[in-house]
Image (cartoon, rainbow, N blue to C red):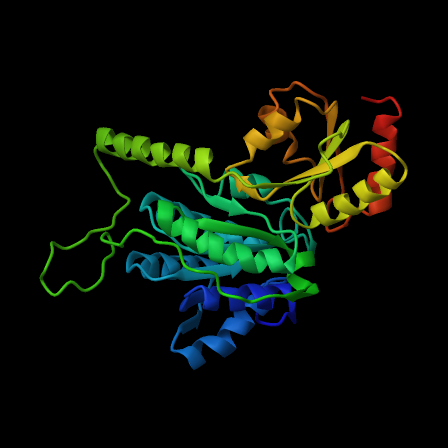
Length: 354
């Protein structure tokens, strides 16, 4: 068994991408993501890979677009304002049904905001990563180890379904250091990339990848087909973590770094004899609706803890069919909630405000 090593989240993520077979990275520096680019700049030339610091975020995502067309594993990373600049290119990649990995190490916003951790890009990742009718696969790790594991998963799912994937990290996870196991998992059996625009030695017709369709009926049919795939993803790829929910009257829900805070608050509440649990979405899209619907059969209320102004609350409400109250506690602008503050909200709700 390989030993665990102490690594910063951003660097562990980059190393995991290399271990997962990524040999093409295109990026642009922005805090708190820059270590991903810096790590790739050092490592890619040594392993025969491609590292290119583009002249802008717009250029970087379009380079990913080109590499993905050739069927190789390609990725980019940025932080919140940079992802906004990439949004047009992300839409083009989704429209062409291309697999790739996009990493967002979130910072406070809107605008330039600040460089401290935030989770205020939830809506952007799950609702509006670019123009048009499309989705991204969105994974939200809560530890450095899960950041590593999610890189392998993101690449595999992206190629399986031909949907671009995003890892929604943040400045806390990206900058913190934890022991990680960098063991490379057994690769899944994925379909051959018969669609790729690579060399064919005259043995097949030319592949053409395009997102422009002037006939509305043709474009509509392509969108219908894409949403059939999305339905399959929603059915088969929902992921979540349940923690003390079997007898929980109040279920706290949180994703990413906020889930670490929420879990500490749940343990403190349990120590006081309060029946509280945690349901953590791992996939933000597809949202783990099944787990929430099942939990709502026994829970009396939910509390969503986020580092934003409540962007996940409506998804929780929809998942449980508005059958239970959904409370919210959040900090924003780069402020991280504390376990004590979350515990105070738990006690307030269980004290009668249900």
